[in-house]
Length: 135
Image: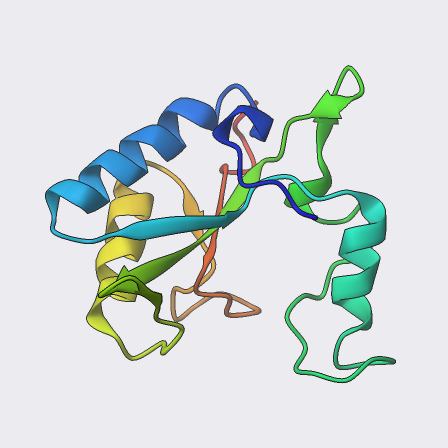
């Protein structure tokens, strides 16, 4: 099962994730981290979805290609986290909900790459990642 632990993020991403959550809460949102680190087997299972397994495609990355698979010294150090806003305690995956845009702005102001932005090659609203130049 994929990790939701902030401690499984890259050391440069941990304080940014904490700041992201704090700012979302201050703006009246209730974000839920759904994934920090996931191993290669989990990544390949997600990649198979919509290809060789039922369901919609949710990633274009195979094992080792995702920022969620990054390690340092053999320990989890994901360079990305996924999040979903909770509305009345329930995950809201509807991309039209205004909390997605609010969370996106907060993430971008912190210097994160947000894959829900209109110019993203593969739009993935929950995905926030360290900028390529970081760490």
